[in-house]
Image (cartoon, rainbow, N blue to C red; front, side):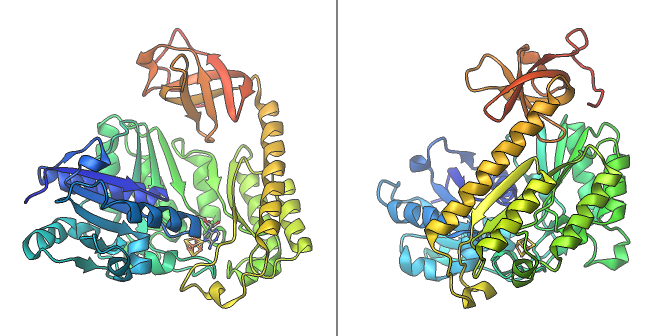
Length: 447
Ligand code: 5AD
Ligand code: SF4
């Protein structure tokens, strides 16, 4: 029976969130409507993540529990990175699954649902390679002011701990015309902020030299779109951050001064073992150069603690580097061995308590740094994209160009606009401020 309603549960990164929007768009084009509750859906999809063991365990637990309590005619599918990592083993473990669809088959969702309906047998599709023929314009976006736009899929870096090159395949850039067309439409539809997405956006265009369009070239073109307010991008591999990109951040009005610049570890020996292809010194040099070009740039990072063989001294190098660089945002993870990655060959020899202790020390340090940074920013005025009411419903909430959360008092009509807000204090990770331009609510000056 043709499904009438769908529900997609999304795990993991922004790329998965975007893939969910693309799948939802395809389903709605077919006439399905969203189900408010997972239990009532005729088609239930788990768009999964494999990046760390915890992410996988969450989904495995969930998949074990569904079936029970689910509508018995519902079609249930698994998509995303776990589909690629576990492939048809998922059917053996969860016999109630109807399909497993890999990250590179996202355009085939409709055909896969048809096959399930007609054959009444489990369907399995996990191609290793992505064909760039996706109709991104179908994406169904719930957010009306911020959008993710995919510019490159896959990753060729093969860091030794990471499953992404195996779950998302080789790097495939999306043609610039297609990206520009989508960005233009988003701006015309009133979007204020576009985040360009890729596992490694800085590799953009390298797989297609004939396009003559590298990442910074693309940014210059997107910035020219009339009405474009804010461009962000993520994620970057430090080795591919070029001077041209730094100049673009300095010169392009819409490009936000925030770079997610994951170091992963502060010890050159560990970086080598991670196959990050830069040393601590080279990384620091890039940060120096970036700060020379864009003195007000904010930096974000990802860090893994407890990588195999990491000594206390090597961990302390990471600690010192964090102290030296002073990131605005840091995502810190305990190493988790992933099947199929080169690091699996090494013993996961750092005890869990040591990993957790190192993780906590970095979290504490980061907290301290972030608080000190906040202190220095008090009294300043920032451009804030007003996104919604905050939890208590009394204040408005938004983010600055450098990704800082701000709350302030204002009318509902400001939601979806850019405002100048002067910050006077901060609570838990959030600035508190007041409108600096109450008489001019549509002011679009940058801050
Ligand atoms: N264990 C822990 N963290 C990992 N990451 C990627 N793979 C692993 C792993 N096996 C982290 C990296 C990456 C972020 C998205 O997840 O820091 O940048
Ligand atoms: Fe994974 Fe490294 Fe590629 Fe990032 S650059 S997705 S960490 S392999």
